[in-house]
Length: 125
Image (cartoon, helix red, strand yellow):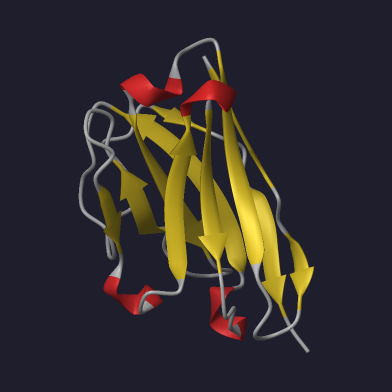
């Protein structure tokens, strides 16, 4: 069972990025997938989650509608589309799998079972 997060990079404020979370060894649609981020010196926070059964989506309030989570079952991949990026979005972004979505926002993902390695997103002018 493995999750591979990718798509990070260095972008300017206002730009967009799409992160990917690809699964191997299991069928991703059978799991809830969460995206988390951890900025330097700060605790990890839950950014978004998509549920397994109905594909319900959940977002942290601090995103203010800028990010969108989606899933492509044929590619066994979950995406996080990030628009209008701000310097405060700079962090390492992780994806994780669990049997259900838990909280978003000030939640560190302790209940999630499988984690990807993280991808760095840096927003700077």
